[in-house]
Length: 196
Image (tube, rainbow, N blue to C red; front, side, top):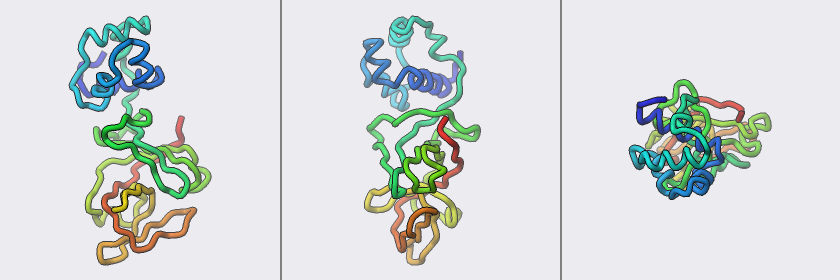
């Protein structure tokens, strides 16, 4: 059983995900969902021992079983749908899911799920991983596949090309380019993999 607080949180997230999510665990164990959300989102440093005991008892396991070594996870914060437009959950909302983290992952690594054919039909339901969000967009992101946010609030996955005057051309495999767009933020897609 891990003693590092970040590792314990990752282990708890993975276990909760295997059980069907925070709402399911909270209901089964008769504990406030807000307590569990606060912990998995990093808003509280730990779970009280009595809460851990209550959850373990409700599932007929030990606390050590909940916090056992398993894969490190990252939050799936939304999905990229048809038209390369994404639906992302706000900071106050719970993540859509948790998935096994890439080996290079940091605490700021996030994932999004591809839905539809925005990046081509072969990438349906794949995961994209990113971190290091840049605002404003920096030159090292030019020519790279990125998750990016437009000033109007839309979140897209596109290849970024500078257009001049602080604007960008946004390119994809399956759609017409979006010319002369104002980009509020961007992060390079660092890895893609099929959802397991």
